[in-house]
Image 1 (tube, rainbow, N blue to C red):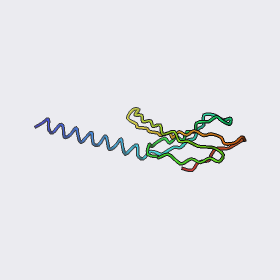
Image 2: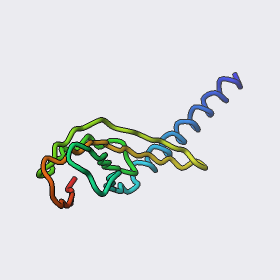
Image 3: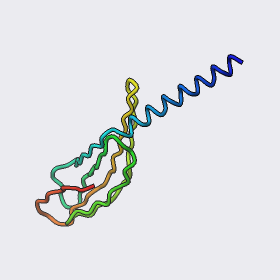
Length: 112
């Protein structure tokens, strides 16, 4: 009888811990970053464009259109880490961008 009671207490404690971990992560702020692996791209070459969201993994791939570039979506990269009981998560949507003509171009800003 005591084992049954101990199991119930253990389940209640685990339930509270799971709720606390999930709720503390869901109230964190989301941070957005853009990065490109090259600052100069020649015609016929491509660069990798990364749209990174920290604090969530629930962001679908934004539609990216950049004038004078062909844009291809490669897919997402996700990361979850637990350090000292703190959960952090991120998702990076990865694109390749191909210039369609020569010139100087500014990429961004992006609204998500």
